[in-house]
Image 1 (cartoon, rainbow, N blue to C red):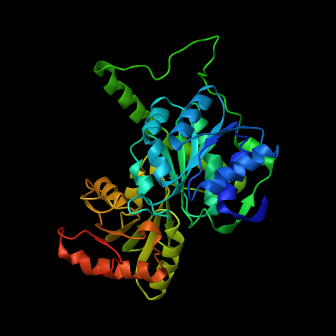
Image 2: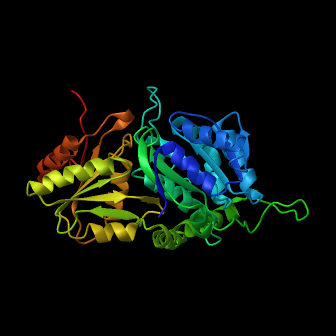
Length: 391
């Protein structure tokens, strides 16, 4: 057992990067991510972390610097949020396509306009097709643990992919929680030194990210897709090993009181714990309600989703992002698509809420269940609502 410490979640993420013996940090400050890299800068300056800290002029430059660092074989970490993630956007595709395992914490935040620095998951959804592994955290312990796991997963020679670890801005980043910090020797045992198989070396010149004409581009993208999907068994293997060493088990979709449930809520991120309280109240009132918490966003857990909803009659997907002009929330759209071919599937309804940092309380989750039961018989013409919008 490690030592349990009351710690701001941002500082816990920085502590995980330190205990992972990160070699290079390149980052630019942006709310609500700043405390992560601010703390790492302190650790480097104080000599507590033997790493190069590269102060850059933008998030685009931060990710570019990370690519160069990891390509030489350096264990590399960065963090960003919201508009900063969008400024990085074009470079994110380079990291995944070139098989460069940068590890990044994303403090999820609303995207402008109007200007808003508070938490939702618009930025998470905006980068879902960049080819990165994406893990979504529910609380501070998840964030600490999965930062360590991200290094092990991304750097595995069978994977070699960048990994985003998503934490909800302010709801997690600025909250003090009890975090169990393990002994350094256990972390060292879990996370071996990084050994990149094709490091840049002046004595052995090679080409990375070369020009690809149309005759080659489709094959390159196919290889990238195959590799991302093939990462899933290694992710599960990592989480199983983590549970064996540290006693905490993570799964692509985690379940709460789903036994025999005919109605299932599905959440992503920190709202899962609020939804748990709502499920407890609804269960106590005699309603057959359970909760699914989606942790692995990419590669998408198709098999686990189909298994966990197989006995339900109604699935309520709660998004913290809106797909403008589309079917509602991005998670709702993907989950409905993933279940399309299933002969026996629940009725799937979606709610979009909590945008721009607006709270969703226990009563709101209870209200969504009530509203979904009203919508359920109405047919396909009404499948989602923006919840709690004032008239």
